[in-house]
Amino acid sequence: MTLVANWSYPTAVKFGAGRIAELPAACAQAGISRPLLVTDRGLAALPVTARALDIMDEAGMGRAIFSEVDPNPNEVNLAAGVEAFRAGGHDGVIAFGGGSGLDLGKMVAFMSGQTRPVWDFEDVGDWWTRADASAIAPIVAVPTTAGTGSEMGRASVITNSATHAKKIIFHPKVLPTVVICDPELTVGMPRTITAGTGLDALAHCVEAFSSPHYHPMSQGIALEGMRLVIENLPRAFDDGSDIEARAQMMSAAAMGAVAFQKGLGAIHAMSHPVGAHFNTHHGTTNAVCMPAVLEFNAPAIAARFDRAAPYLGVKGGFDGFRVFVQEFNDRFDIPRGLSALGVTAAAIPDLVRDALSDPSCGGNPVPLTEKNLTALFNAAL
Image (cartoon, rainbow, N blue to C red; front, side, top):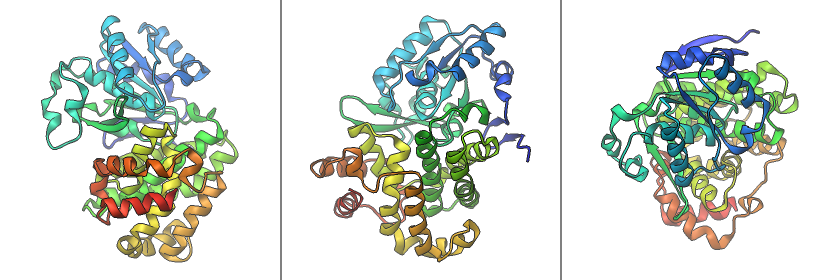
């Protein structure tokens, strides 16, 4: 099957193998002539990034790159990126990579023309209106993993290095103008990253599907996203060169990010502080938390998963799905508890405090409290 398409939901997407060659056209469409490519340290040295820089250079756009990006990007990385953007006289950003590169790249474009600190634009109420929208640089996003879906989002997650709290920074104009989804860019991903990012996409779809908020479009996207992960992540994990499976996973990642406009929940409320305090991989942390959260949310979500399970190819309704998720994690060597990621029982009070202040709490189908979150963290430990 040949998977090639042009989408405009929620933004313009150039999807298909080899479409990284269209990077100059994407920049032109976004009004960018002097881009700064923002990615993470590990990706910066790989051939996939050299190829993108060569394409930029050959098109007369230079080969400027900023890669001082941590796995959980923070305001220190952001300040350095904004400085590089301004010093280079750039007029737009190519956000390139997995979640860290995409999130920080979007924030460099966002903060390049702002005068207030980034924390003033946290996703709280209408704080986004504080920003000077006319000073936000355009963004072209190029994901190189299939997980976070940040290429389709209007926000970034930035860690406060002083408080170890992850904050969601939101503005409608942070949505990239053009996205290039080229599954060939994901072929070289290590198996552990393929698994962790793929399970991140699954978590996004599971939580969106579980959210009590009304958004039938996102509900349908979440259901199909779950199916794509279930059917294609094992293929991509076993054979990294399976380009169709890689393409389907890239679709699922984008779909997860679109779907969670409906809401996230306890999985993300837990994984955000765990990642901030223990510097864990976000998708892997989500996967570890998922079985405990499904059990916790069972009274509110069992009926909808009873209906969804046959479509997903899972026998036994919700109970079967819950068992399947744990077996699916095991298939990819995901640890069975947060303690294997370095989380300690002594840290739970701090994790609970930070989880309760995370915006993801509002999308959980069972209201979260200090008491039940403490029990949930202990169950996931």
